[in-house]
Image 1 (cartoon, one colour):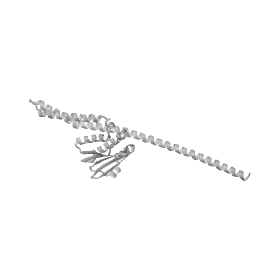
Image 2: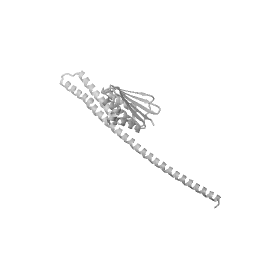
Image 3: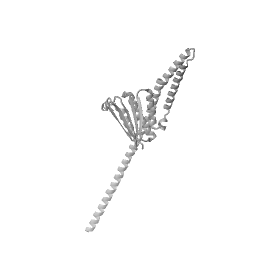
Image 4: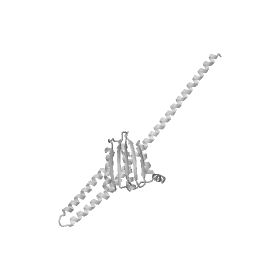
Length: 261
């Protein structure tokens, strides 16, 4: 065989090897791409399932919290006011002359009971969280706390209001509600402030109290940090983030950031 024939044969062999290697590389890359796409799809499905689960969980928790509040208000407020009105009616019934001053007190107490019942009926309407802005919903919640007289609750906002979508609205409200309830149960605070900051890309909320605070490392070490982790997990599923700062004998702050998109 001539040298030229050998060169041509070697060239053909090298080209064939190159084509085979190229084809194998393309097939390998295609398989890797498909595998990554499948993994990404499964991850998205898992994240979506977790998001749907947290939405449902938030709805149930809000309902449970609402029913608990309604039960308490019916017993502590409406029930006591109507009981007092009943006693006043009995006193007036025992008297021979009409006591107009006592009658006015009875009318005033019945009016208070009716107002409380209207507020309770409003609280039963779950659509309020969907139709009202998150600021209005939290403002309503703090108004109720102020009427209870447990502590002084203040709400304020900074920037031009921009609404979240319905699902993020629900998740954020539950995070704020949970933070407020933690304050009422554990902080021994006299003042609670909630600040809404409307940035260009996200809504920031800070819930701060002047209570006794706590040692975060100690709480986590005692495996009691479930609530703290739950707040951060909910925020991350809504595409945002949340963290808690607490100083002993000074107070606790919960910082939340949820993007509009």
